[in-house]
Image (tube, rainbow, N blue to C red; front, side, top):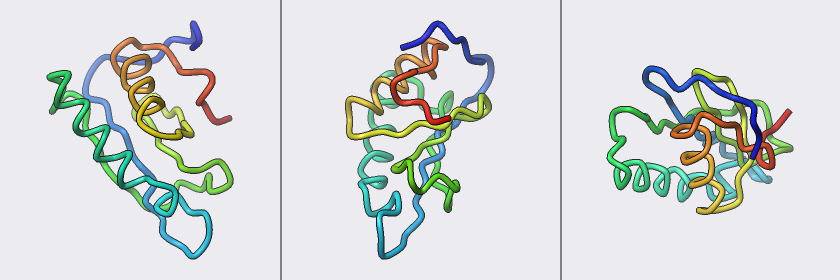
Length: 105
């Protein structure tokens, strides 16, 4: 984690890249499962409607994938399973701190 602060005021979004190809695109690396997990966890936290979980086409970060974008802060993350998704939600979206170990760029 980092001391770098993010914007927490107003509605936030998680955009999961769901690009599909024959190679190592995000959809082929568990993006659908991660999106479902994020939705479940946000609901469990009572933040449904405050944090929206969406899917999008290619985010242009294929070599870093799977990728999720936090909006409006504009931070891209790479994740590898439930723990990483929970950390992004807990630290960045709820706590306002960038998860440095997962941040891309």
